[in-house]
Image 1: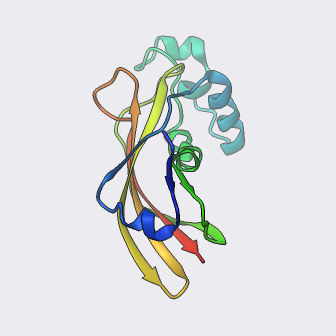
Image 2 (image 1 turned 90 degrees about the horizontal axis):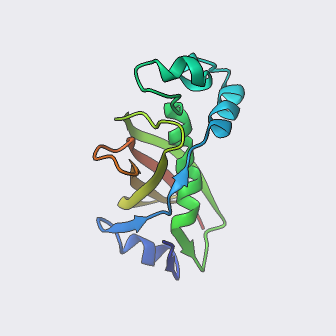
Length: 152
């Protein structure tokens, strides 16, 4: 679900309201293995399906940071701003909690809310609340508070 806005001011006006959720995204073993290669984190719970089948989760699981990294993909699919800023800079994270592992083959999606917006000399600093849910699970995979600087 993409929300379209005329400009930054329309986005800011949504502060405190849910912006919706993304489409479901499947986390497959190939993605998990590629992330393991990229980060040099080759722990068996991520890359050894046979050993992981008898492990605590019953299958391999995505790295927490892999799930977190999907926020970049999800964020792009949420908002379309017609009068875009010249750039949007990842300004960091205020809070991240990994609440439940994402097992291989799971489908995840992100729920987004603009928590706050502050005008600074460099642009608008936006704080977004993310909740990444796992299809069929009550507890989310993660919650995170991200910061983005939108430069005019």
